[in-house]
Image (tube, rainbow, N blue to C red):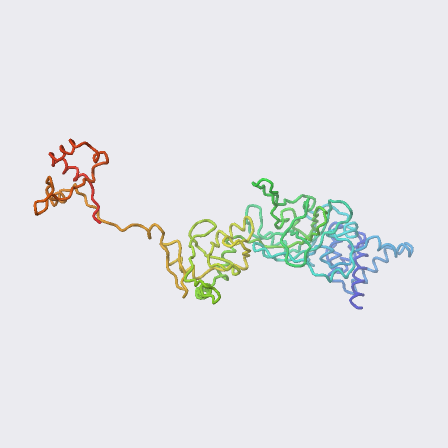
Length: 503
């Protein structure tokens, strides 16, 4: 009962603050020692933050006093009806406004980049963050969770994932929301290094996904999406053209960087999401993040993601252990030292712990490819290989440093390994000495030719076939054969010009 009473008082206080004039707002802020300077929308934002985070009984009494003073000259009917003109949704503060923590000591001085005045009663009264008025019991349902992105470290959550709700029957909907950055958050953005010219590493990003609470959701854009920050359109990733006929182009859904169009001051920022209402439900969230590079993720992986060589050897033995139900015994398994991504020798062998294979890919190229186009799919088995699941194979790293003359190895059952030479080296014929019969030394050792060749009994020996002659010589006429027999020196010259393989 006490919590219900406090919630009712909180809603009542917000209703009264929304009806205040500038003078009323200044009196309220001055009462608690906060800055009274700025435009009306800045004062309203400051007062709502006061009600949400520091609404003590004294503050509530002061709000009620200012409200009754304003409507004192009007009849009781007007007093009772006034709060109803600006109803406030009974949702969580994150759903009402994208608040960051606000420094009580900020001056609130308006800069040249201050936004134009906005109709805050209609903004807060009709819908905030595109949400219609819902009963408090909706707060008990599970919240939408966005998938963790390896290249983004969340610094602050400015707005929890909040469902986009259509305000009418139109197909194209506009959902506005307002938030204020604290001085600490502004300093983080200003003092962060540049990833690229004009792109800060600390950013405010907008993420959109399906309103599905069953599992963490990947970023997914609604149809006809457009994002406007302080009345300026923000760049949204476009479609990738498809080279295949009949295949629709795909759009990469990533966090949308709003930083360049924001007011980095005490002024409030207004973000309007335009989306197509075609039946599916979407949720949006705002985050202050620090974007990381592939080199930073690689260094982090080398620090915390290296698997000890002995553990990897145990995994190899388990892989090759004989299965009692299997009729074929596995005696070894080959692993390539070439990265399947770039067809180059591995430098940082890596794979996902969820993968069943021993083959690795290069972590350097894998992280660089996912930095440009995040898919996080294993190039070996084509299954998900998220960054948090990656490990560096310590055993294969050791093998790469020891084995430099082979591109493939084979693991044995006991966990040992041996290099596998290239097929050309293993299948070449034995090397035989080549004798040059034309050299003087060899010529001197040759027996003098005789015609015909006879054995020691004086009988004719076998015919001698001159392999240095071509096929036409073998089919020459008998007169030519007689001429060759009559000129042995010419025949010797033919032998001297040839090469004989002495195997």
